[in-house]
View (spheres, helix red, strand yellow):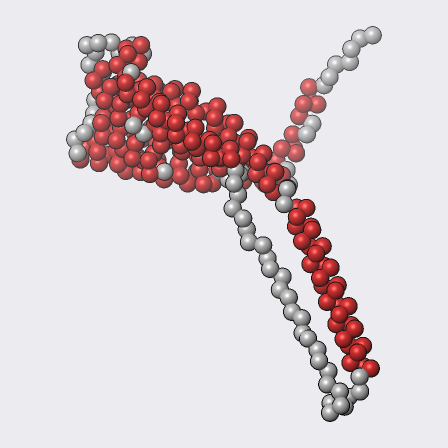
Length: 278
């Protein structure tokens, strides 16, 4: 028997549901839009940074470009797998902490309902006794005890997510290892990238790479924190931190490069300060 051909339009049959603004779609939009804006903020800031460095000269621009490529590749190797793993583990542990307290809450609600029922029966018995007792205050004196209770609302407890703490510690350790590796091996690494001995790009590339590597712990810590916040479904906080750091870098670049006449060293220091501040 001949196989039936599958119509091509079947792949787009539910395409309209992609733009359906239901509860799940709105939640995805709240998470995805800030994350997308954070990804676009870095290239824009890098473009402005490159424009400032290009004003120094073509040799410095080429040297900084190679150093940035080396630094970014080292950061990706060190932290990107950790960020993705951190996001999944934090999300899983956060979901477990939200689900586990429910039985305790139900038990406390049952206990409170039992207390309320007991007080209701006590008040009913007191009212019946008052009806049987004559209204002669000189002979009979009713002694009643008023019972009062408060429903104490549980205070919100701080969440303890072990994977978040572990990610920050590992990120800091990897940052220090990256800094030591790039600072001590700057010359052979650049030589492997094509910047040979005697090249005019060697000196500015070494200066930029060594100074930029001082901010490696701060860079990896910020990336680890972004993974933690994404695990909590909070992408707005990393967006604000990224925008604040990029604006700081854009403001400090012309100050250190042109006002202080530091050249590529000023651009590297501006990067380190912007990442350390965020």
